[in-house]
Length: 68
Image 1 (cartoon, one colour):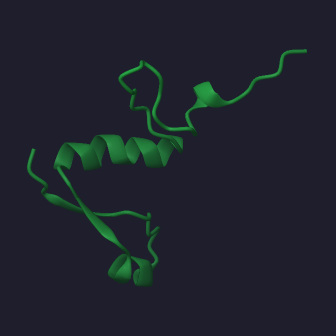
Image 2 (image 1 turned 180 degrees about the vertical axis):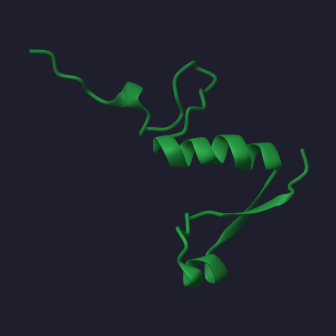
Image 3 (image 1 turned 45 degrees about the vertical axis):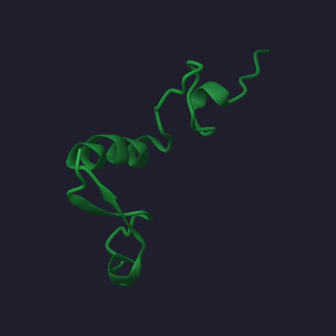
């Protein structure tokens, strides 16, 4: 899909300086509205690699859980 959205790489949270001078990336609308917002909401990317495991090391499946 063609890029239609200029997305702030670092979320600006209303910071005017970051909004004006922050780095941008081009995204298609669906990537911006679905994937990017999901990452911001959850704190990790849910994308799965070719091996069937999540690609983001922050994904909960990589968190060690200790059972007592």
